[in-house]
Image (cartoon, rainbow, N blue to C red):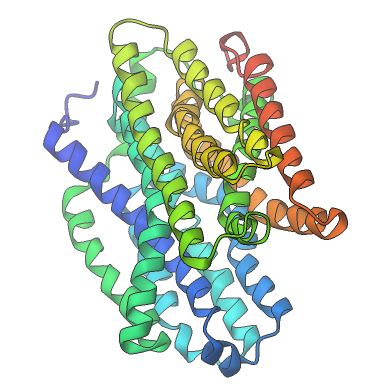
Length: 414
């Protein structure tokens, strides 16, 4: 290790991780605020929105966000984490605050596309910071907390946006959330060091090995297994984000309040399990177990537990269906921290931003595919059985990807 690099104290390390988690939650505040506004009759009337317009506006963010994951990963690999993250945070917060100035659907769509540009840096930057500031036996916990924040963000953001709309109206809601969250920048700029590129070089020197090129990484079966597995994992998550409430209402006959309770319980369960599973894997690894075997076991177990959703979907019992709706998504939390940490274990550190960019691109493409495929299957078949069978297929495909492709012997080597 470079003697000029000062080690982080545990207090400072976990303070920055807390900031990363809070930043992730803020990002979801600015994603979900439009969804809440789109439910308002006055907002729809102001912009003269059709249902087709609403669908396009909901997807606008994901087109730019997914497309820019690899360039954003390259950017943080090249320029570090601290400043790119701060610039992106400022940019997306300002764009959110400017939403009331839009005069039509086109401008609103453009702002949401630009919001995706600003937020594209968040996951590559956060994962890169964890990679070079947390040891192997700490990463599962750190990533578990980071990913749990991505599940708590929509729940907290929806509640906060609703409260602000009812208290001040939709225009001030966008302004308050956008500008108010800028206070996050002060502790970020004070606590975070701009030294992750130095830490990367020091780590490469200590291994006495030349860097492995990003092109070489992309030739590995590990990265393609990770891409497939990530897509399959997120397909279920985005189904739950977009169609689970409709499933509860249309198929199971719940009222709106009950739907909110069961949807919230599912995502809170996932957040809790993700945090505990990351921590548990870290403890097992700290005792001397092989990191790849441990994290693969948790990852595959999460996919298998999640696949039990199909049992509830096919059951005539409402109690069974509701139990497996919560149990399956909560169980997927076993995968959440560990599949991200496994990528960092098997892949070289120098390209971590770009690798995370590739993985997060695969993670967000289902944000486009899952709602469209589910809608088509429901329309074509008249029930949710086919969409649930599609989820089951994708989850088992994810298991196969991690069993056969994501293996230590396939990791990029010189």
